[in-house]
Image 1 (cartoon, rainbow, N blue to C red):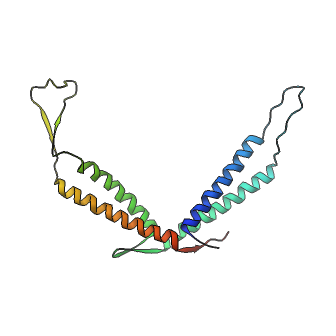
Image 2: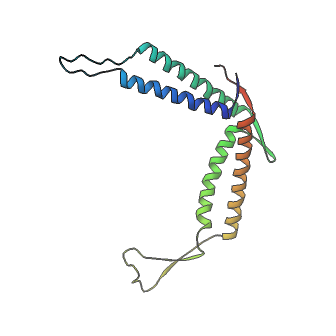
Image 3: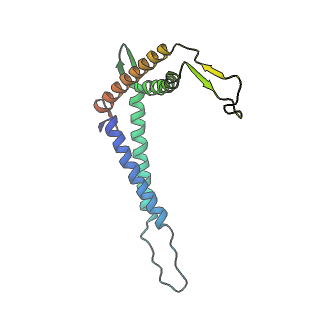
Length: 170
C-alpha cells in the first residue's frame, strides 16, 4: 500500500499503542495469585494468541520503519539551491540546532560583565570583568541566518511528509 511519511508515523504510533496494550495484558494475565483453600480467579490468557499478536505487530512496525528509512535515504528534496535526501536534512537540522543553541547563548551575552570572585562576595578590592571576544552583531546575523535555514529545511520536510508517497508491503 502507498502512504506518506506523516501517515506512516501515525500508523506506527497506533501499532505501538496496540503492542503496549498486548504486552500489558500479558504482564497482568500470565500469572495469578490464590490463597490456600480459595477458588482462584484465573484471568483469561492465551499465550499463543498474545505472542502471535505481538509478533505480527512487531513485523508491521519493522516493515513500516524500513519503508520510511528507505524513502528517507532515496528521495531528494529541493531546499533552496541544493538537493538533499531526507536523512541528510534530519542530520543537518540537528547540526544547525546545536550551532543555533551556541549562538543563542553568545548573542545574549553583554559586551562587558563584572565577575564575582568565588568565596569573596563583594569584598574584592579590584573587580574583574568578562568581555566578549566576538562581534555581537555578526553573531546575531549568524543566528538569524541559521534560524532561517532551519525553517527552510523544516518546510521542505513538512511538505515531503505530507505529500510524497512510498510503498509499504504490509
